Each structure stands twice: as structure tokens, then as C-alpha cells.
Length: 385
Image (cartoon, rainbow, N blue to C red; front, side):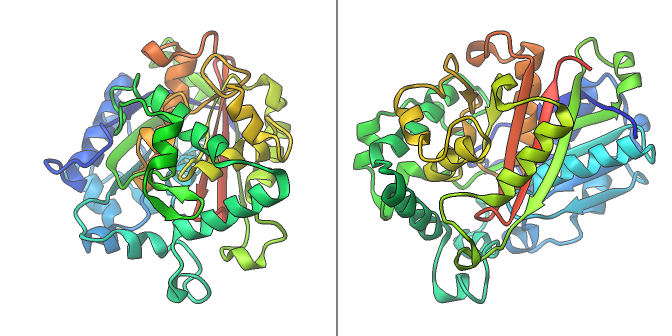
């Protein structure tokens, strides 16, 4: 197996992008990542695109050849990767494995979602839950995560104020990210006074409906310096699964797919949580961000709320969590999220993150999950090979 490097990254603006189509977004992101890698379309061997639900959002399936065609990259093979909200993370993993295996050399891993063209996105998003036991019974993702939050509060004394701090930190970082959907700061009081969605989660505990795309250019590590002076190396790429339905799990306060994939990633990369300088976690709801920092090993189970309260997850804290603003502030265009997380870590390790730069960042990590954790994709990145 070959070592793999990232030599180009890009992300479109995330948000309610009424003036841009699905095709516009993915082509913009893809071409910019090719340009960032100082490559041309003729250099591309394969494309993997993460997308959760173009069929439900746009009535458009068979999107992979459509993307290759609209980007002017035919006959390059292009494949769609679907794993709900982890589609982007798994597209990245598929691209990494393709390069590592030697089957392809230069691969694009991208992600895209156009969510705002549909009147009500809720049924499409609910398709990532267990249809028979959850969605068809009327439960939504805010309600599923609300149950997880309630249980964490019961077992560990976590408070709504502590959960709110996840959103406050995200908006603080997002205010420094020109590509973020929300670039405004918020306060704990604003979170607690926002409309209740599913007790104890309120509107500002929840990530938004978003449009956007992101793209990453991969190549063999031995070739990386041909394209850039600042390649970023993949140190680990792992994946794990769990039940989709919450009622089948051992615990509502631990996402076992994250724990399993993270443990394997640390072992492969030969690092520990203490070695990670910046992490992008899947905070589709504030409780999920809290669970992530515990399940990834940055804080003991039950201590995530106190860590948020004490500022240990700020950019200059013990571990910089979601310097991009996270799903809460950067935005959450489902299929693009895992790629955007990786792009942020690349910018951090290159030292190109501007006002949100984590000082001296050399090792970074991403956690991208599907649904309530039925799928988890973990990646670890380094400046050093």
C-alpha cells in the first residue's frame, strides 16, 4: 500500500445559495481543487463524490456521470458515494484507498448537496434514520438527538448551558471563516432563549439546511512535491458502523462507531488524542459535538460539558474543536460536510486559516458521521510524512 497525500483543496461558500445550481457548486469546488494542486483535467484518473440524497432533494439520480460531464472531465470514471451525512467522509476514504492501492494515481474526492430547492427538507433528511422504527413513527433527527441529550443530562449532570457553549464556540470560529454560512457571534443566553425544537434542544442547538460543495485532490505521497510545496499526508482513514435505530444500542450517550473508528485510527497513525492539535467534529446538534469530544478521547465520558464550559475546546484551548465553525456555523450540506472538514484541517496544517488559525497545528483529525452514528468515518492528517 502507498502513502497518500492531499495536494489541493477547495470549498464553495456554504448557505442558502439560490443563484447556484447543484452542477454549479460541484464544478466550482472540483475545478478549484485541481487548480490548487497545479494540475489540469487531463491529470485526473478518477472521481468519488459524496452525496446523500440528490434524488429526494432534486429528483436527480445518476449524478456521477452528470458531474463528470458538466465539469468537462469525460471519460474520467466518476462514482457517487452515499452514507447519509457521512457521504463526504466515505468519498474521501474511497479516494484514499484507490490511490493507496495503486489502482489510480490522481483522484478527486468531493462532496455536494443542494438542499434549499426543496420545500421541506425534513422527509429527505429523515431517510437517514430507521424508516420502520423511527421515521414512519414520526420521530425526527432533532427528537432523536434530544433523547441522547436528555440521557446524557440524566447520567452525567450535563446542562443546557454547557450544550449551548458548543454553538457559541462554533459561531465564534465561524465569524472568522469567510466561507461559513453563519458569520455572526451568538451568546449562551441567545441559544437558551431561541425557540424549542425538541426538548432540551433549541433552534440554535441545531445545524442549518445548507447548499455547498467541497473538493480534495489526492495523489501518491511520493509524487506530492511535484504539485505543491505544502502537501498534507493521510496518516489514518477508518470507518465503523452501528445500528441505525437508537433502540438497539447499548447506550444513548456513546456513539460506538466513533469510538471504534477512532481507536483504530489512533493505532494506525501511531498517535494519541493528546497529539491532535485541531479536530473537526460532526456537531449537527450541540449534543453530538459534546459526544464527539468524549468519544474521540479528548475528555472522559461525562466531562465534555465541563470542558466546553471551561473553554477547553476553543481555538487556543486544550484541543481546538471546529475551527471552521463546524456544522453549526460553517453549515451542513450533507454530502459535502466530510470533505469540508478535511479541507479545513488541510488549511490549518498549511497555516492558511487566517484569523481562525490554530497556532503551530501539525496534526489534525476529522469525525464525520451518518444519521445518529450508524456510520462513522475518521481521518487523521499530518504535515509530516
